[in-house]
Amino acid sequence: MTTAVTTSSSYVDLALDLLDQAKRDGATDAEVMVADGETLSVQVRMSAVDRLTKAREKRLGLRVFIGKRSATTSTSDFSKASLTQLVADTCALARAVVEDEVSGLPEADQFAKDLPDLDLYDETRLTTEQQIDLARTAERTALSADPRITNSEGAEFDWSSGSIVLANSRGFSGQYRASNFSLSVAPVARDPDSGAMQRDSWYAVQRAYAKLDSPESIGLEAARRTIRRLGAKRVATQRVPVIFDQEMAGGLLSQLCSALSGYALYKGASYLVGQLGQRIAPETVTIYDDGRMAGGLGSKPFDGDGLPTRRTVVVERGVLKSYLLDTYSGRKLGLASTGNASRSVGDSPGVGPTNFYLSPGTKSAGQIIGGVKEGLYVTELIGFGVNMVTGDYSRGAVGFWIKDGELAFPVEEITIAGNLKDMWLNIEEIGNDLRFRGRIASPTIKLQEMTVAGS
Image 1: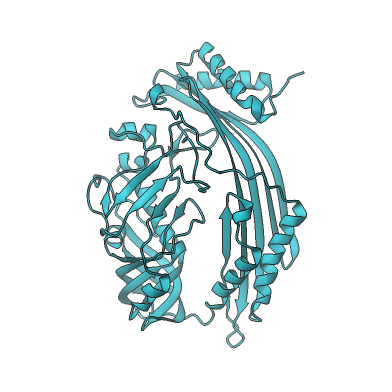
Image 2 (image 1 turned 180 degrees about the vertical axis):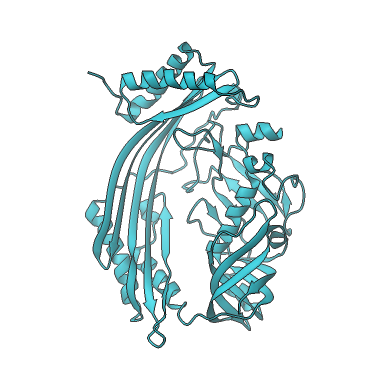
């Protein structure tokens, strides 16, 4: 009869045992990651439970190095026989791959030594009925907000909780727990005159349940966003100022993250190659990546390499100060890691942001809109027309036409086009409405001018 390790308190000891075994099997270095978590997702539609999924899983990933050769494997079978075979198989795979001169674990003195409590875990446990009720309340609030809201694509409540353990043969061992609570709803409205239908949505996500917006406020905001889209028109092709709301501005930051990734840079697949130390935006633009933000949705005490996370100034007063790097991509570029190694169990590290955000300005979104005589306010983008090598940008857009400082009417079936390099340099105003609903966040931003292609 085989035995299995099933308690999180045993995972560090288990990892250390596997590291010793890997050394005995010929590995020069090794690394073990264990993830143990549970999730519950509830979706309701028109008050009926449409989907309910609950899962608990644990997974172990092993990466071994034999000189400059490496291999990575994973398993969900924690029996002793299975793990013994996993170590042997991974070492055999590592011997079979080609050498990579920059492969290897970080140096021993680089690993995280302080592992602060970043307020990532909330022990609150809601019953399934409570979670269903939260989703139903959000949807019911949206449906009752306006008679033109006649349908729903559903409301969803998601909860997850788990722990991460990372240990390696160079003396690093660390662990942390994290949780997430999120609620969203997507109502559908019908124009009583034309019969045209529109949908929109709203959501909230937090590490701690007590900080989550109420289901009523989420439902009302989703309804407001949906109703305001009724009666949408096309506009003529022209060049005008373009304002991106918080969510869409966050999308621009996400594309900047991709261009700043060490892997894109050393492959020459980024328009920011060779731009370190150069001006890429106006002086009003300062961007941070902060892995130590208390309660942050991207926060963690150590990265996927075991290095300490930190607060990095990525862009300072418009000048590019730092890329986003893990150990491997940093070595390829001749630079130090920025603590941005990101990984899933069973995968080698890559690069990802922690809490990546544009520092807010002083004006409200309303004040920024009020300063535009004629232009576009973007609330949704469609498609993926972005070339990260050249920076060329062309995407379908939905939003509102601005006339004399007011949102005059909704618009759809238009395209906005430009180049990311020019778009960042042409930022004119930054809002004061920064709020995190994910790892990447931005306040409202206004660009001096873009091409809006319509009728």
